[in-house]
Image (cartoon, rainbow over all chains, first blue to last red; front, top):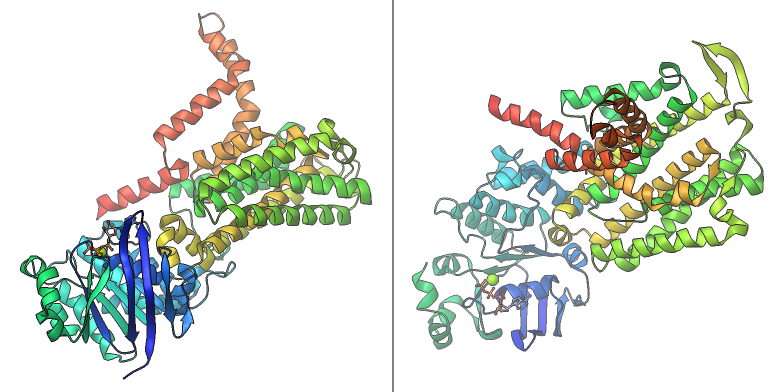
Length: 254
Length: 359
Ligand SMILES: Nc1ncnc2c1ncn2[C@@H]1O[C@H](COP(=O)(O)OP(=O)(O)OP(=O)(O)O)[C@@H](O)[C@H]1O
Ligand SMILES: [Mg+2]
């Protein structure tokens, strides 16, 4: 088996009395794509928020490459290799599509504190950004403001930012939600490409079972914030927990 | 070449370009175009306020940070020059030491305030700056032994910058004296500082600031430590504001709480940046030029208007020169109403609107 990259130990968060993520212990390995499923409100997005640091934990630890990152800032974790695409599109609306991607490349290149060079002069940053826009088929729209893009294109850009970041751990939160049937495959193919790179750890929150069947090496099920099942996709989908907690409702709206 | 000097950030509107060019030419040749003590004084104030307002725009328009301590930073530079000149004796070395130590102190205080408050919330920063600025203003008027208290400090600037210093006779009817040199020192330094800030906002760092202003949550999630960038821009802004204060002190040869620390200046800065257009840099130029002119000439203009309508009812009363502040207020409200994005934003919008129609 490949190396463990990311672990959560008894990861817990309480909002008031409500336990949104309940002592989740789980390890994710290099080259493995794990689908995370569970009904609405199960705590999937919150689990992501705890890993990438948007929400402080109530208890438990997050460990990346053997190092405890539970108290690190979001930016720190991002630079350490945790990358996030958001369920609700979360971009820089009044900047151009190209500038959105450039910002990510610039961050990776560590250029943020250059005060006296011209941003537009860093052609290597622009070139990389253009290449990524080409991959997500947004090249034609590079000069548009993000706020002018369609929902589907914004979702694509959301994924493009994560790909530009190229972290060790990719976290996708329902990347194709609300996308049209001809747009979704672009994103899914990109995820399949990433998976083919072998050493990337990918976490994918997804409701659509056909997508999971195509991409996932493993499924974990969250139910009321707790880890309810973990294993081989075919087995987990067939198991009682999933049938009870999850099927019926979500599967029909695929 | 010009595009490079402007860091690729061209006015992007022909009207704006013409206005900016007119202001540049007017300021560059002010002593020759508008001879007279009063008008050159106005020109020098415009130069200084352009720098001061642009430095504020760096923080507010680009960093999205509201501060009420900008006058305090301005005052630190001014008092720095005054104190150094008083204690070291007149000279350029005293000016340099004073300006630099004032600017460094301003940056250090900005750093402390920023580090403590910008972690929390931007609004907290605004409140702290208000408190610190008020405290410093009180302190300066209390410590009369050091600062001259309410009376302020008059001091001597380098000989080469005084009217007594002559380096020739006359050129186009303008006396070639130290006052002229002082003006061009202020003009030159202001121009350099402005171009420097224009560069900063178009640098990779400037892009990060815009990203943070747009969506700080996401900026953090692509690896930018938001607090670090906010503190940095605050320090830079304070540093440059203090340099503007140093220029002001050099020009006035006097500093006092009312002149360089008063809250009125803070209000002026806010008006200028909003009327000119936030987050554009060029807005600072237009806002400063417009308001300084209005403050200096609106009274006179209204005096004339009152004379013209002398026979009529009510109107002379409204045009009374003492009502100039009222009219400034009206001007402000109207400009916010008609140009919510400032004059620069408005001019650029019109261009875009036309381009869109042409498509
Ligand atoms: N910041 C917060 N404060 C309070 N409650 C929260 C917060 N974030 C999430 N919750 C609650 O935690 C629970 C889990 O929410 P979460 O968004 O993680 O679910 P999810 O599994 O991602 O659902 P969906 O499939 O709808 O995206 C919900 O009950 C939600 O209301
Ligand atoms: Mg969710």
